[in-house]
Length: 114
Length: 113
Image (cartoon, rainbow over all chains, first blue to last red; front, side, top):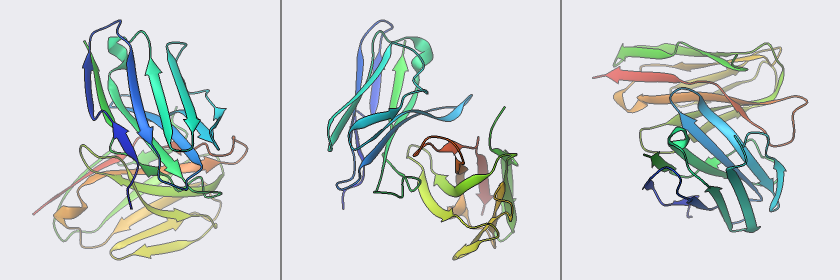
């Protein structure tokens, strides 16, 4: 079975540019999570969806960040405009049904903003 | 202030040694998970514990959930170089929104051949 798929795996962009990260969750999983990982702050939850509906976006750093889940098999995390401090590894994870705590992570997108 | 405090942050040992990693909090958790992450990859779920006092074994790994559901430990017996990685504990805190996991800062384990 395919795991969580993320694209791109690496993204290098200049400050001020728009960045879009993509995620395809595991088929049948109805919860989707976006995380950011840095050396300083560790793994932080940005936002999560249940049945395509955003449930908690309290971790989204500011208005420059937005996330959508138009259907059960696709989600995007957009940063506009990007800043150097957004450089991090962004992970998408999904979980099945009621066992939301059993999360399956994708390989991540390493974002570098210069 | 970290909701979940892991110790030690770094652990460097020789193959064959035993080790224990701790995950502590002042809060009560509904469940607690342990993940392992290798460089360039996402975290991989190792185990979930949900009952106070619960002990789970996964080959050479033993996981324990504290009686009060505020702490957990991971013990590895006869460590091997393949155990090298970042170990993360994560928990679902009682009273927080459904689905929200909090992660500890991680323990970087290096096992030398």
